[in-house]
Image (cartoon, rainbow, N blue to C red; front, side, top):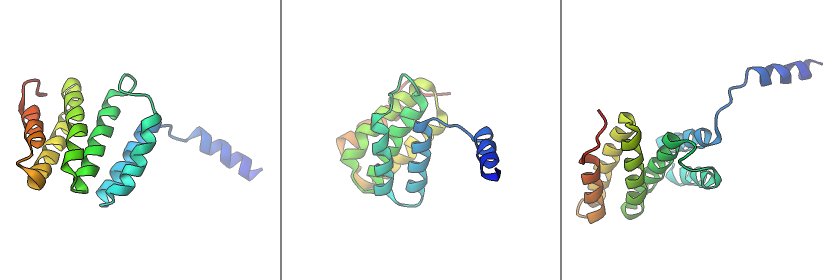
Length: 133
């Protein structure tokens, strides 16, 4: 009886969050712990979820997290394409917070491989027109 009441209460007060938000949050936690490989495993689960037309901000954040995981693994060549996709989407939705994160990512990538043409292009993309206010 107590177990049944407890289950009912847990369901009534449970916070429902979209799957993409759950996985993004979990991947971000792994990245903050310095575990990029584990974050990439979590992000892999996102590949089967609906794309940008459903949750544009979360989808763009997923791209940022992929890029950050690759950058933390010192794989700048792999990080830039996801970072560029994230930058375009973040500019479209005018997300200043995420654009700030992308600038930090660009600084990290520049330290890894500042002469890489794609890293330079990514920096130009971040500075180009269409900035959020």
